Length: 285
Image 1 (tube, one colour):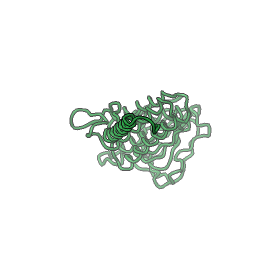
Image 2 (image 1 turned 180 degrees about the horizontal axis):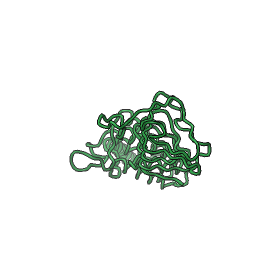
Image 3 (image 1 turned 30 degrees about the vertical axis):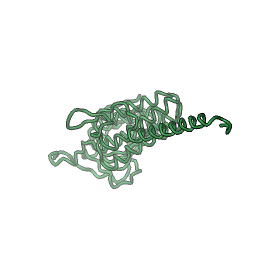
Image 4 (image 1 turned 45 degrees about the vertical axis):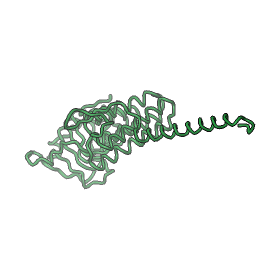
């Protein structure tokens, strides 16, 4: 501003500048104290359902929801890198909840999966965004598994359960059906095997053409690849499950306190979605 300008002009400009600074500062304070509202997320409570903005929602769920809301905004405006960072932050909240054994109600899981769909729908062909979003789906599946029930060994009333110790991987050949008769028991305990050791080793093709079935068993501990085997009425307990994108058939299969190694692609996302939503049947031909 020119020093030769009239005094009243200089004072007017200074007053407007001061007003602008005060206004921006006040908006910043309001944003800090009252973050933008997010789309309603239904969470069970003793009374009527509340959304993720409610003080009745668990703190981690609110933080998770805010992270997804931020990711959705960034994805909508084309800021993919920022969206990925927010999605990763959401995944960290889910992981901490699992480690702390914090439950998530089905309504909240349904909301989370829907929001992840919306984020990805902004850029459906972006492979990196798909990878980040899928990792959150897998974390949600692990959270669901961490609070799932169904381990027969925890029921003192089920006297029919017979434990069989598995100390080394078992090779299986084409055409086999593995069940209680095959092992002499219906609870295969592989908890003494290394976490990375495969329990059942089918032919290398890992395809349905081998006609391998595993039925009416509980399998605990170690690791297992799911591809190429038809699983029916099987419960995995504390097992590291792998899926490599091949043929898959799960019929009434439960996962209790399991960890998942799925590919961060569309097939891995679909399987993680099904487990997180509590589905026990899933197929890929």
